[in-house]
Length: 594
Image 1 (tube, rainbow, N blue to C red):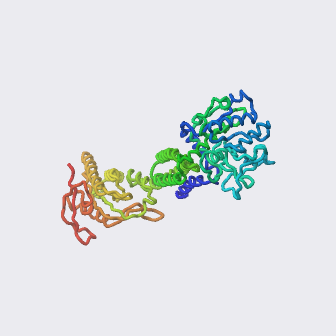
Image 2: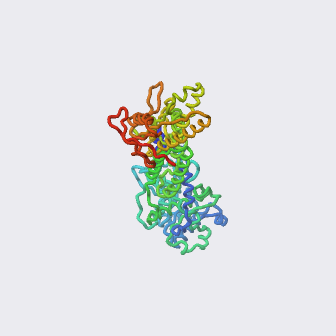
Image 3: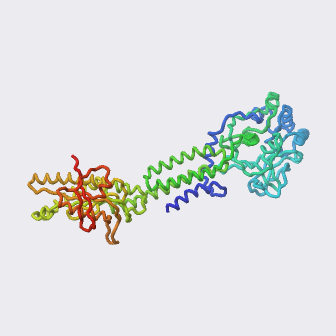
C-alpha cells in the first residue's frame, strides 16, 4: 500500500506534464501561472513597437466604420515617418469607397503592410467562409499547426496583397486568452498569426520556417510598457518621425464600441491589439537573443516530486501527522518559489502538478500512516505495556521497525534479582500478608528497571528477570542495568528500614548481572507468548545471582558487564566456578556510591 501511494503521488505530477492528460489533473495550473505573470510582468519600455489605437477620442472625430481612404492615409503617414512595417488588426471583408479600396490595395501590394484575416476553430454548420483568403503557404502536412474550420477574410480586391496575418483566437474554457495559434492549417495551406507575419515581413531578419500550433503568450510586459499613440494624433500629424522611425507598427482599436476586448492574465478587459503586441515583443526578444532560455522545467518538477515522495516515505512512518503536514506545507511553498522561477522558461510546465501530489499525500498518505501507527501502537502496547519502559515503547513506535518483537541477536545486559530467605520471611505470615510483602518487594525491583529503560522479562515469584539492549539496541545497556541495581539496593534498603520500625525482620536482595550476546524476541505459541532473551549471558546472570548467597555483597557482576561499563567502578572478588561453566570466571561487585 505504501508503494502504491508513492507511485500514485509521482504519477499525479508526471502525467500532467504531457499533453493529453485529463483536465482535472491541470486544476490550478493556469491560475498559478496567471499569478506568476502578474508578479513578473515588468514596466520596461518597449521601444521597438508602436501601437496605434483607434480609441474613443479618434472615434469622436469620425465614428466607425472609417473609410478605407482614412485608414490608408494613416498607414501612409506612418510609412512616411519611417515605420519598418505596419500590421492592421482590422478586417475589411466588404468593399467600401472605390478610391480608398484601390489606395489600400496598392499599399498592401507594394508596401510593408500586413492585412488581417481571421480563422475560426469551432465546428459550425455551415462553416464560416467570408471573403477571400491570401498569404498561405502550401503544405502536405499540418506539422503541428492548429486546424481551422472556417474563416473571415478580406474582400477579393485585397487578395493580391503580399502579407496576411491571422487574428483568430481560442480562449481557454474560463474565457482567458493565454495562447494564440502561431500557425493555422486550412485547406492544405499554412497561415501565420498577425505578429509572426509582421515579423517575417518587416523585422529585417530572414523569415524562419513556420511551425508550431498553440503558443503560450508570454505576457512579460505590463500594458503600460507599450508605446500607444492615438489614431487621431497620427492623422493630425502630432505623431512624427521621431515617434515612428525604425519601429514596427500595429493598428487596431481598444474602443468598447468596436468590441475587440478580451480577458488576459493581466486584466479582465484588454484590447486584443495588445495581445498581438505581446507576441510581437516576445518574438523580437527571441530574434535578439534576450528571450528566456528554455529550461527542462517538467523534468525539474518530476525530480522535485520524487524527492518529496522519498522524503515523505521516510518521515511519514516516523513522525507525527502534524509534523508531516507541516513538512508537506513547507515543500509546497518551496515548490511555488521554484515554479515562479521556472515558469517563464518552460511554457509547457504544469506548475500545480507537484502541489497536486502533495495534496494527495496530505489527503491519503498522512491519514494512512496515522492509522497504521495507531494499529501498531495498539499491538505494541498490548504486548509491551506490562514489561517495557514507556520511553522504550515510544521509541519503538517511532522506529518504523516492521516487526520489532521478532527474535534478533543483540548485545544485552541481564539483571536477575531475588529476595534472600523468602521462605523464612513468609512462613509465619498469613496468605494476605505474604502476598502484600511479595507485591511490595517486587515494586522495589520493578520501578528501577522501568525507570532505567529496562525490559521486564518475567517475575520469578519473589524476584524478577530484566534486560537492557532489547527490543531496541542501546550502547549504554551495561551502565543502565548497573544504575538500576544501585536504585534497587536503595529501595530495598528503605523498605527494609520501614519494616524494622514495625519490628519485622530485615530484607536482603541478591542481584546477578552479566552482559553478552542473546537472542531477544517474542517466543511462544499461538496460545501464549512472551518477550524474553535467551543466551549464555542470561544463564550466567542467573548463576551469579545464586552465587551472591556466598558473598557479603548484594550485587555480583560478570566479566561482560565490567567490560561494557563506562560509568561505574568495581571491586574484584576473584574467580568463581559457576555451575554449568567449564572454566571459572572472574566476578566483581559494584563499588557503592556514597
